[in-house]
Amino acid sequence: MAIRGMSARKAAAQLALLTMAATGSVLTAAPAQAAGTPLCIPGASDNGSSWSYRVCGMPDIDQRRAGLPENGANYCAPTAALNQMFYLDKHGYPNLLAGDFDPTANDPVNYNEVTAKLSRMGGLAETDPSGGTSHSHTVDGINDLIESKGYEDDLEADYVELDDEDNVSRLMVELTRGGRDVMNASVGFYDAEGDRVGGHALTVVGIHGDSGNHHSVTFHNPANDGDLYTQSATAAVTYSLGSDNGDGPQVLGYGGGGSGTTARLEGVTVITTAP
Image 1 (cartoon, helix red, strand yellow):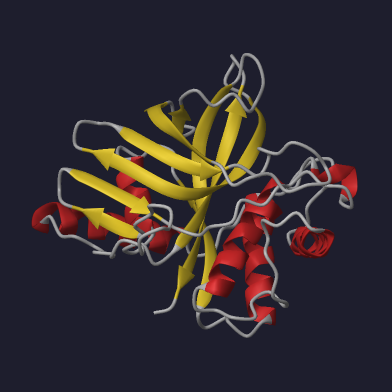
Image 2: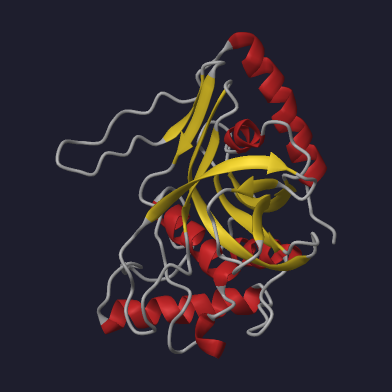
């Protein structure tokens, strides 16, 4: 599978990690939100002993909904990508998605519009209703949408593998370039023999790590929904990361693959913003 820009992006991130380790630099000093709003301080930081990333206002769209093939059972990747598109549309890239509506609302107009956009995103990403979406097709679908809206010089999606990394959380923070960029995660499910038996895409809304070898990632999970006709409430869930056996660090406590499987963080789809 050919992934555009992976080697260059990963090398640049690792070089920047060495620079940060030497300087203990803070990447972003973002102000707190106004009083009366939920506490969320966006941005990324690294003081040498701990590092973190947080994005505020990221949607948490449900993948399972009436109106999609197989009721959206395998639409996790286009749903996670649509979260990114909605976020970017409201943060510097207007008209990336046509219309003005709330992706988290339950009224029929909003809900049906989101379903239609999710259907289009699935088409661009060549989602197989019964088998899901490959990493390369997800990246190509996002970039096709970006190009169709005239943002090809401002936005670009790439997939970055995270297996065999000594410090995944720190690399992920650096890949956001000081909190400017957004990412989705690919989690693979492996059976007792180490064979991959499935996978899932989730939107990354938080990352934390420290020099004591504590690492965690916070997700919006497209499959965390209740029924096919209403949008569930936004929910962020945090998982600690464990050891890496070559397929990626274990996502501790995540049982999305079913009984007897182990979840591993395989990689991330990053959308780079300009400049």
